[in-house]
Image 1 (cartoon, helix red, strand yellow):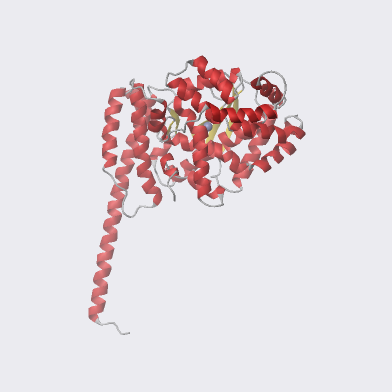
Image 2 (cartoon, rainbow, N blue to C red):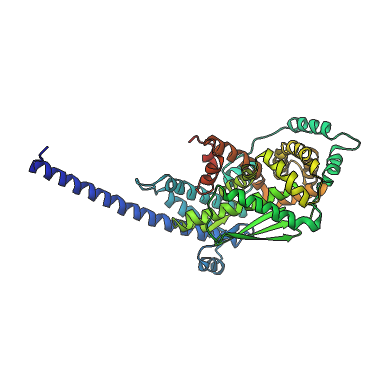
Amino acid sequence: MRKTPDFQFRTARTFVVVAVLITLMLVTSHAQDARMNQFAEQYVRLVLAVGQHDADYVDAYYGPPEWRRDAEAQKLSLAEISTRAAALAQAIAGANPPATADEMTGLRYQYLSRQLEAVRARVSTLMGTKLRFDEESKALYDAVAPMHTEAEFQSVLSKLETMLPGRGTLIARYDDFRKTFIIPKERLDAVFKTAIDACRSRTLEHIQLPPGETFTVEYVTNKSWSGYNWYQGNYRSLIQVNTDLPIYVDRAIDLACHEGYPGHHVYNVLLEKNLLRDRGWIEFSVYPLFSPQSLIAEGTANYGIEVAFPRAERIEFERRVLFPVAQLNPDTAARYYQVLDLVDQLSYAGNEAARRYLDGEVDAKGATDWLEKYGLYSRPRAEQRVRFIDQYRSYVINYNLGKDMVARYVESQGPDRWSAFARLISSPRLPSSLTTPR
Ligand SMILES: [Zn+2]
């Protein structure tokens, strides 16, 4: 068909209008990005400022070193941090993602605003505000752990009574049973190295990691935790393993996956690569421990164990590879994991102990007794756990509730668990949005 001059003119005019609109949208979107980046910088500086008052707060920082030096030099008071955080929250609330924004950018806005809310809650606690356990976990981790009764734990304990017959209390029998699964001290490093290699190679089959990623392992004592990943930036982690108490063979895969692959190390590496370096989102150069980010971090680290080692494969690997390296009897592996699966059903007893203790219903001894009775913690382990609760408070929910929330979310995304898992640890998704259907 021949085009008339009028048609050509109208086409050209439409083209100009569309081009102007696109340019305007891009200019606006760049301006919005620039504004958001400024908010992100203010957020990072506030987190570093809180770190001056709370030694546990800044879990990782690998942004501009001068920002940390500024925080140290200024040493803002908590009242001043609180005022600045309130002003920033108001500014972020008035900002909206550009119309052209992708899903990740939308998540970025929600994430920054919610993380900042948690900064404000932590500052308010440091200034003396007392929150109940559930209020605190909601404010800091964007989630509340369900309540469980003694009767629920009792029914699991009854099954364990049957599985571990004999004289003495159940906890004493369980302790005795577990003794045969302690990794001899001189085998510890070899067992961990084997476990780390296995977790790493399984992860690399599904998740591409940037070249140069690596970590070092250190053995430490006198800590309230059993393992810790200190992310250093530049795709490097320092993983510390606490040897205060005997280390059972199941901890090797658990720690190697949780702290390393596909857990904390991989999570931090992917945030640094995808969000900080590729997108320039500076808020991901800092990790405030008492924030919703921790529920995602701990939840994915714990769920990642099962993603890397589905139950049957795990028992097979333990029996064939790890038990021999630890010089343990491979024929006992299957039964060991049957018992552990039951004990795992008691994990919420730990949350109940923390809730009762922090809400003032029981004292430290009461909490220790509760952990021993309903969580099947040995006395020294229960005492270590109460020290953990003293230090980290409602953070305890991030492990088991976090894992359950992450599991439900990942499994709702389709049969390919690895790809849904990798997407989750590469995005700024909040705990409360894990429960929203896709
Ligand atoms: Zn962890």
